[in-house]
Length: 113
Image (cartoon, rainbow, N blue to C red; front, top):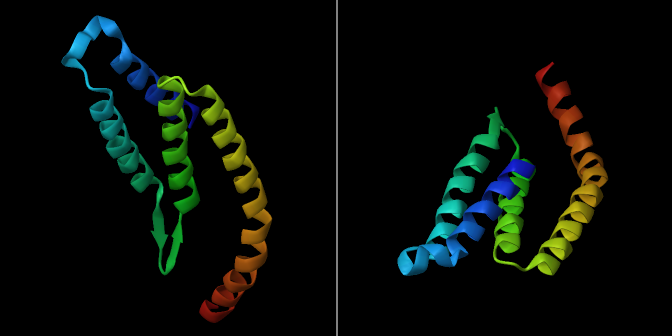
């Protein structure tokens, strides 16, 4: 996922370079990054019967791209704050997810056995 962030940063930073003059619109580059990363995230979502997996992975890919674009635009403090917030959220949600969905998973296994 780090490559998604670095790539987003690079595309955004290049769009801001004065060497390209007014031919490059950074907002159009950002829109294309969002579209492309959305496509990557959609590929991370898998369906197994009634179970859907990969939503957290897809959302994380999308946020990593956004953080890369923020760094590319030069807002490093916002990128650091967002990165910390996302990491704390991902670490905190893991035990909660296991606790809430562990019981449901065992019920489904027992039902199909």
